[in-house]
Every structure is written in C-alpha cells, then in structure tokens.
Length: 213
Image 1: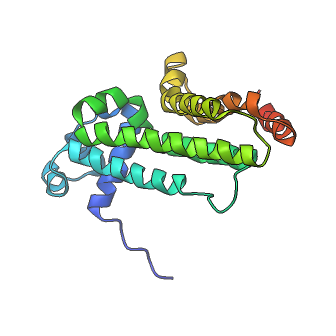
Image 2: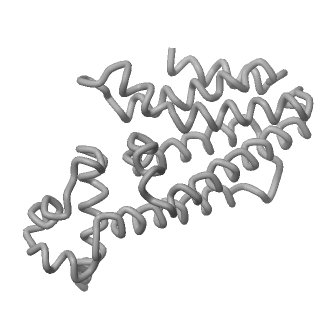
C-alpha cells in the first residue's frame, strides 16, 4: 500500500491554527504560539503566511467554499421537513468546525475587511437558502405560511444560528459541551418552523424533536 504524501507545511499551518483558534479564541493565539505548536521556527511560518490576519483570511476562505457547497445541495427536488432538518445539522456542523469565527465574530469584523464584507454575503445566502427550503415545503403542503412569514422566519432562523454558539457559551462558559450545544441549536431552529408545519410534517417534527427533550 502506498503511503500518503505528508501534508505540506502550508496546509498544516491552517489546520493547527484552526484548532488553536477554536480552543483558545483567535485574539489569544499568536503566530509564535502557532509556530511553537507545530515545532517550526517563526521564520518558517512567515515564509508561508506573512501575518496571522493572512492565516485567518485563508481559513475563512475555506469556510466560505464549504458553505457554498452546502447551499448548493438538494436542488433536484423539493425539500421536505426531513431534508431541512438534515441540512440544518450540516450547517451547524460547519459552524462547529469553524466556531471561532462565530465566537469572535465582532472582533474579526472590526479588523478584517474581507470577513466584514463576505460574512454579510454568507448571511444573505443563508437567508435565501432558508426561504427556498420553506417555499419548497410549502409547495408539497408540508408548510403553511405567507411569503412575509417565510421571510421573517428565515431571518430569525439565520440570526439564531449565527449567535447560538455565543449564547450557549455565555450560559455555561466553564462546562459547555459544545458538540451537544450544536445539536440543541438545530432543535431550537426547527422550533421556529414548527408552528407552520402541518400534517405528517408536524408529526415527523415531533418525533425528531423528542430526541432533544
């Protein structure tokens, strides 16, 4: 069996940085700390990335690409409530993977122009995709709502998903099970849709929701 080629230093820097940003918060991690964690010299790190801001921007670009792939999913047929639940799980997995972006969002927006401009687009795309899912559920009679209600619920859903991690951390900063908190985030988002679900879709929601109660 052929051995896999070792990961390049440039890729490893991003992987290690992401782990450290998630664990300690981006403002608390320096390039020297990243170099120490990798057991390389600061000069070696600067050869690949000139600053921590460049590392953050590169990680954010990865995050954008993965979200674009997620937003492009499931357009071959109308989505049902189970598809929506599954899509929300995938969304929260991305938030979990890049959770430092959400935890340190205000700080990042204030000092990184790319994140400032691109994160707004991410939220707009999330809004459009949520509205699409709700409209598709309406088209197959799983959801009953006006266009205005769909827009309002989609806005609230995106807002809750964006700030859920920060809320969970504030509520239990010392003993937070972040993976569990993400699962409960999916449930809280689905609760926003529940009043508009009807028929079998509502029954399925109750069944899925029982796992979180």
